[in-house]
Image (cartoon, rainbow, N blue to C red; front, side, top):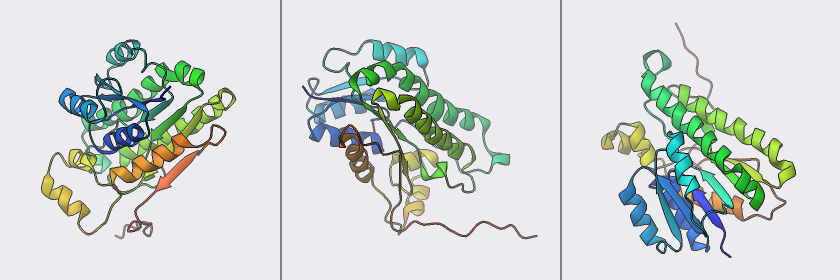
Length: 250
């Protein structure tokens, strides 16, 4: 029987690439997101309703999340891998000029939504001796100007992953925090408020990571033997490295 992966935020970027990668290996996939048209197109691409299931809801809405998971049909209900990919960054403003509503949206999506769906699926994942793969970021360890709440949410994801790992080790459930660096995807277009020129300028000459690179790493983690756990995996493009510490001069 085919294994099943549930991938949040599957309508673009990392999530879409992860769904494609798992489907190529014969997994069934449950795809979540807020855009029904994109979910339907991806279901068709991945082999139709026998292989892929679309669940259209907002990860921030606990009632909708519960309802979607409660309605999982046979063939998709036994989740072997949860890929918590849904997340976003909004803006680059320093804290003193940041938009509070944007901060709350990042917290509700990157933290509250992630822990909600994880908790709701834990019994199933324990029964399947499955794997939880959480998308954090290098921002969970390395701060940068304007990263403030986004970096804070990803630090939570990293620490939550380690805590899950500690709690679930006796249950045979593996947990990994994936921490990408500079990556090219729709994620950055959203962060720039849809400004394509700013998006293009940001990536000019950088040779960033692509969604397929992250999908390959996630599939590798999920496909390892059951007794092998990757606690965290920090991934950067070769062109990205660490800068000197910031110093403000009067």
